[in-house]
Length: 114
Image 1 (tube, one colour):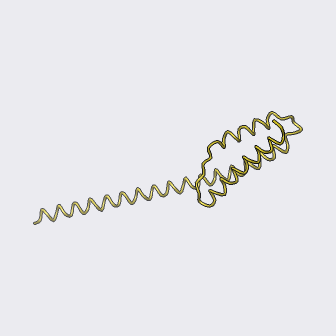
Image 2 (cartoon, one colour):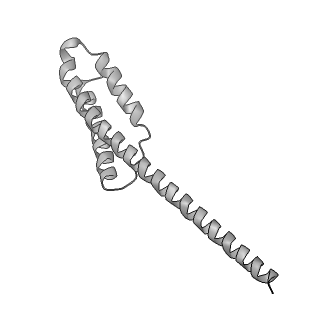
Image 3 (spheres, helix red, strand yellow):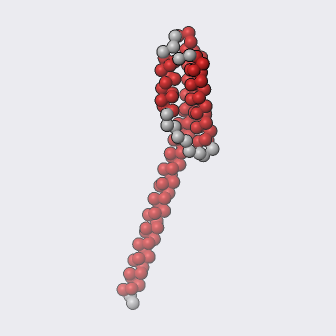
């Protein structure tokens, strides 16, 4: 693969990662499908290069790794928030169920006392 093609692949993949990070930072949803394949291809390309050509590409991989780590952190935060929301809904559901049971019991008791 020619250097221009490799540069294009790096740019495309890094732009995708940056876009995903920005979208997550703004509270949006992202589809990371195919990202793992793109990153694996880049790593394979760099690993197959001659030693003298590797340093600038290795540096670019490290920069992408920093952005990928930020995406991972944002996804962890999003996951934690969703878990909190689900737990809150479960508490609300349990409270509503208990309230409904209390009303039912009160109705039954008032019917027995009549």
